[in-house]
Length: 335
Image 1 (cartoon, rainbow, N blue to C red):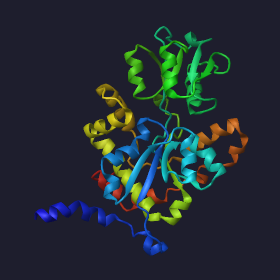
Image 2 (cartoon, one colour; image 1 turned 180 degrees about the vertical axis):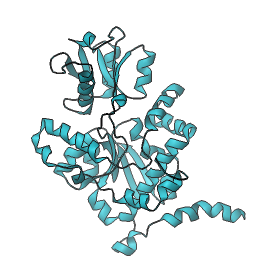
Image 3 (tube, rainbow, N blue to C red; image 1 turned 180 degrees about the horizontal axis):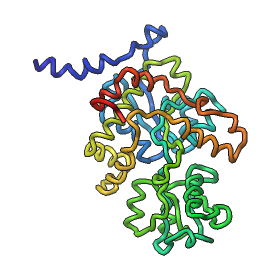
Image 4 (cartoon, rainbow, N blue to C red; image 1 turned 120 degrees about the horizontal axis):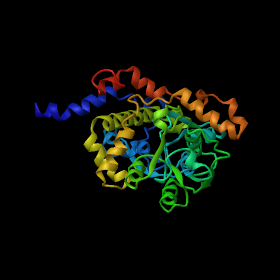
């Protein structure tokens, strides 16, 4: 009886293993991969969490999770230095337009979720007129979110404020603390630090439900063709990671503490609440991807010719979904 109990997890996983590449492609299955993440942000923590929870190991995969910051992330994927990556759709789509081998397997955030925060004395949009707003880079997702927030405050971003580009979200926060800027965009756990510092929360974009595809899970079409089983196994491990994040709160705190580099309980709680909105079935949402394409087209009209389907392949996730695997993880209907 003990033997049967010990073997149960392996038997369960084996029921869902898809036949390997060796039979279909005549080549040995790839089992050592690298997964990059573009930012130390909650929604980019999924590969690290899945690794720490042992889900890649359960799939027979040896995985190295590495930081590939900003624009390095898509370049590392194209060069083969990484096999998968988490990155924003804003970062992924321009690269995929030039190199169609890059493709989006899923999406982790459907709505803009940043918050516009300011110094305590700034209580309204009128108080921001003539002020400096700290951002990351010209035309990026931070600026898009900031513009949406400012417009919600009935301000003209091009006339009523000045933007100061600081390069990183860490530098944005430092500039706010040092009063080099009057306001900036933050997301958890920086929202907690802003609250503790007495900053004023002017606009939480999550409340406005503005569609804008944020974090995505990305790979290469060539890898999907040469190693389809690998892609399915990796996707399955990540789906289990989403389930773990949403349902095992305390264990997730422990892993997020390592990923985010903080033991602050409140910061971890704030981060978890933000990330727990990840969909159980993490499909990229075409309307949210279209919002990113529209944003890119504002700066370069060539993007107007593209459609979300040009950048998305839902095959591996859809196969798991249709099998009922994801619903079973949640004991019924996954949400």
